[in-house]
Length: 545
Ligand code: NOJ
Image (cartoon, rainbow, N blue to C red; front, side, top):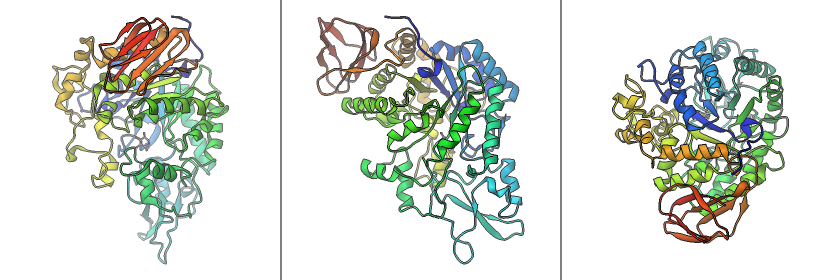
């Protein structure tokens, strides 16, 4: 086992996503905050992660969990103060952790000063030109400029009342009506974002996660889409009832996503990042098809990483897993960017609930932890937390509200974390949590899992500890695939690392043609006789040659 460590930090960093609202509340208002995150830094450092990514904590009316930003250069009082944010950066750095902040360039909140000015200004004014304001169609302008839908259901356009009291222009919002899209053809918008990037870079932030990174450039606004309702369904993570082919055909060549113009914008962003020393980085959130187009975001002179969302949807099936890994590595090889892997985030069902099987989730995690590149972990994933169970009255996601409950939305993955089994609200807050915690969360509390050698938490700690030392994990090195019986994932990497995963329900024997020892396993019951490894069903093994 080699102990040499690798290249620039973000190329194979383990990055832990904090959703501040649900992480830890320090002031009993039932909402997590920055001082709560600072309090839990020792826990985060103990996991063996390299960096934190914080979902937005900026000034916000909170219509979309803070992804509706009213002032990107200040902290919402719910989450603390600017001083708290600065303290978080410096405390994290003291513990050797990098800090990544979210930046939301596709839209502002309708509470942003620019939008308020736009509403008070005349059609055609400079204030309106920062957003997408258009006259409607029809004899009275009563029809929206095009037929696009909001990703949160309903039309992507809202008509305003002009200052003379009459119905007037329409503005575009790909998300909630409280999230007007910015017009990136307007140089003022780029300048303002450069100011925001520098504002946080000056305060020591190590990188940015770019929200809806594929959305900034839009096609001709006057062109209707051939089937906007089907496109909305295809864009939902759980686009159930739709064939894969139909989904991919709808997601290919969308009029408002992944237009060529976005790349000119990121070349400008990159220049700002490169003004700073210290290996600052960017990671793009871009749900696009075909996935081969993701590499365009991480070409030299553009961004550093792009999320690969394959594992948020992957079936527990050896062939599908192998196909995905090979494709993801292949798609990036020409641009030299590292791949990224994620099982969970705040927008998707938690992996344990999605797969409906804890053993499979543990085994899938050990595959993700062993791959080249960077690994993203969503808070609570390390506890094996299932989605919270919520009554309709408790749900707050605009996707739930705008679809009249047809789309359950993402609140299930956002229920506050359980820290201590015996405390009120499992130690998250001494006030009433903003989303009620499920009673079963008690068993998943950090203190309970800490004390249990076989827990999800200790599985993750062992993985991340090994990943820090072993050059065959993370890193840039290649993967060598080996023939294996159906249902088995079998690959090796540098420094004698071997991975075997059994995606079937039955114990299977595999000849690995070498002697090896087990260094980590997602579940019990495996044994080795000579070069024959016997792996129980739904289990992943890490072996050392
Ligand atoms: C992606 C974010 O992850 C999600 O939470 C948000 O609702 C949308 N972008 C809109 O900002």
